[in-house]
Image (cartoon, rainbow, N blue to C red; front, side, top):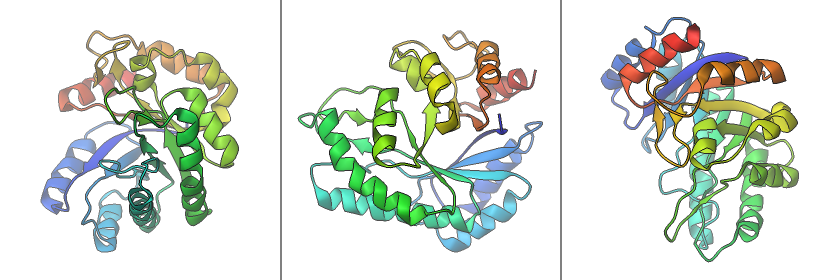
Length: 258
């Protein structure tokens, strides 16, 4: 793997809170990168420059905002607004000299099937990809299944390949916990697409159930086995823990280092 890191969640521009969070992350021995979840709508270029200075010495990758965003809504007004917000996130990523930005394509209406969602998403993804140009890697993430009137897209790993075939150059952020939640076998996909996988979101999960908890707790993802598998296939991207509880982060990081 290229680098191992953790998430830093940005949901406000309160620098005191963010500095406190960075102090916690700096206690993780061997930390190499941080994935910044850039959800705060009022984040500015000045804030981004400050944050890059606070994280000096670490690689920065970014998870673009996604709450209420969609590129596969039935309303082009919503899709275009989401695209503009993602362009802003891309500019902030560039300010921080980020190496990669992960995006969610979003939620589709229940009556829009997967093929229609793909057709809807491609023009927006092409425009965003061209906007990013060669500044950093753009990666799309697989999402967990959801019911109701707004299912997520894309969910299955093959749907990433279908999008990438239409938007060449797109890379993948694979959330391995989402694979477990979706009860999706992932080994063959990883072997076939390892060169397209640029980032991994790693957390413990139950097949068809809960996710985003630590590896010291019972779960269905064997961390050691997964690391060995990545070494076997020559995975060369980012390895990012996406765990919610601080105790779980600390204990899982210790296990990762072992």
